[in-house]
Image (cartoon, rainbow, N blue to C red; front, top):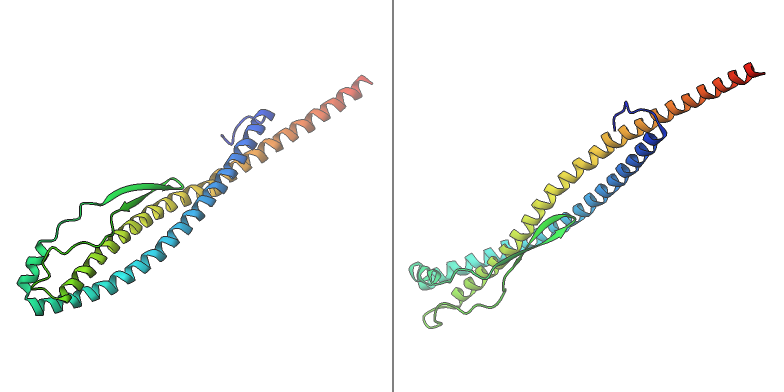
Length: 204
């Protein structure tokens, strides 16, 4: 509403109603922001745990790969690696957290049969294969969490802006408008009271 709104009781009721809605909107925005912050903090903790696990698994994988390269030869290991089939069982869905679409990546974490025969290979190659498969599974989970955290952070920023606008601009504007109209109506009532007193005194 315009601060120069005509000071009537109807406009006062309308301004008070808008002020109440603005305060309720701010409370909802604040609650939404807090929920999103808790969600992103949980995701960050999960991401740290998965990243630590990935780092450890990568070290094991490269150690085993280095050993396999020595035992079998780099060319043979490369040949085995090229026989690995691409991942084609990843499904992406989504869930909503306070209006934020969060990706849900689904894939089968199962024991995959080797693409090479056990004859002529070593345990180090099996270890490298197992570790790299684990890294892939962990990386899929980490990418899902990081993507969700990015979207939540973006939504938190938007929510914070709206909450700040309500708190610092909209609510003070309506409070000022309500006070202005109330003061104007009170002034009218005083003028009317004075006028009635004057009229009564003249009638006597």
